[in-house]
Length: 78
Ligand SMILES: [Zn+2]
Image (cartoon, rainbow, N blue to C red; front, side):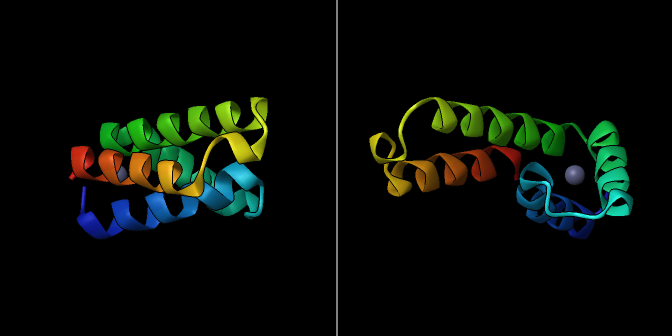
């Protein structure tokens, strides 16, 4: 799996979770996630992070912490 494909997939994960994406792109990302464990992990992480953020009020989780979590995840998958 090329790095470029992964970068694109990870980039689109946010849109994917927000639902701001076409069905065709959704399909392509789904396909990529199934064949790429690191991206699948990133997706699971981001999806979980969002449900935690949704449960608590936005003020309870600083953007800084979320950014830090994302950076940790990126380092792990690289
Ligand atoms: Zn990937």
